[in-house]
Image (cartoon, rainbow, N blue to C red):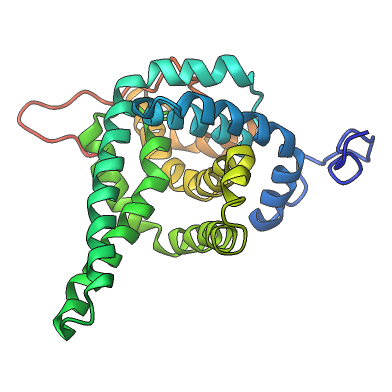
Length: 279
């Protein structure tokens, strides 16, 4: 009998779920999903760590991780290993580029932050670049909530992924602060009170837990500002009438899972103009 078998047992029969009943608040829904997927998150975390051992694969491995977590958050069926490696392979180039950029930018800004902290007593003017470094690191954290998630969800060049992630870092400012708060709350106490045991915690479940928070909170913004406008435009181009939209939304999901291989095609660029991704 497992240690958490009684705590996270969702196999018992119940009254069922009314599809027309009120939706659960996302705060409670998150913890329900986290409890239900607890052991799956451990499996996913171990798979992710193994694929990150060669450092150059951190980006593609993060794409695989985020793809599985996106399906967890949307309560979609997942074949853990095959889906992970499908997302890993199909997003390898973009994931590799995003991973390298992530490591370089975080490393440079992080090193600068540590240097200014160590030398802040030299001059009061050091407070200015120190504050800038903290702000830049915060923006990079906010952008990271969206970069890999967009890579596995829509077909976009890396430059547009970075551009849109920067926009989302301000567009979802309130949610980003909430995500950052819970992320820091998980990371800092572990590092402070459980050093060096926190390394073991992260190897077991830490990465999956932190990324699950980010994916759960950030994905609705991608749906609202990228996927739904795209689908609306596609319906208009197909000549569907607006009066059918409400009925369609009730009968069908607003977003059909593209999987790790197929991604929604973007409208073709008009000659002489720029394509707008976020509307």
